[in-house]
Length: 148
Ligand code: HEC
Image 1: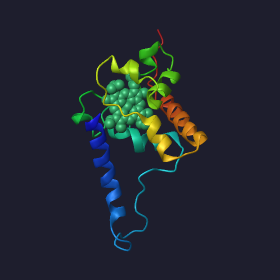
Image 2: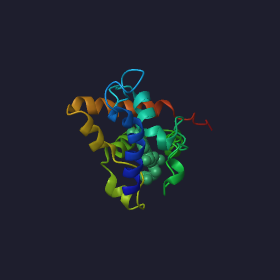
Image 3: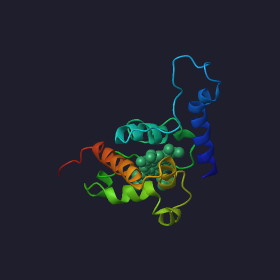
């Protein structure tokens, strides 16, 4: 978990450092934000998840090689669940509600996003919308399940 935090801080500081430069020294206008305002599932995924899970969701993000656990392929969730997208489970994983259960399968490199999203916005409905849209986006990138 400490490694994960370090990676997150490092990758965020790369994005955020320009913001630390005195005003007027960053050509090209607004410095990038630490958090994105978008509630769109695809934007959230690309911003918060793709570093590990890859832009295509298949687990090959640029941070993946340094993790102890390989990030899951998020395009085969339905395939691995008898053809049914496990929406509630995905939501639990994102919120961190099932950490106790996950811990029995070894230590996890997967950040717990629930508290992070809550820290980004104090409005519960905004956080719920973020998580709901992320889950829908992940559902939309599921590999086709082969008919038998
Ligand atoms: C720092 C790397 C990292 C980031 C960033 C990350 N994940 Fe993960 N994720 C993992 C790893 C590693 C696993 C694999 C298994 C575990 O440890 O539970 C995983 C597992 C998962 C699973 C469970 C998949 C399964 O097969 O059961 C879901 C769902 C998931 N991640 C969603 C997300 C979402 C959504 C985001 C962005 C909000 C995200 N992850 C960001 C590393 C990451």
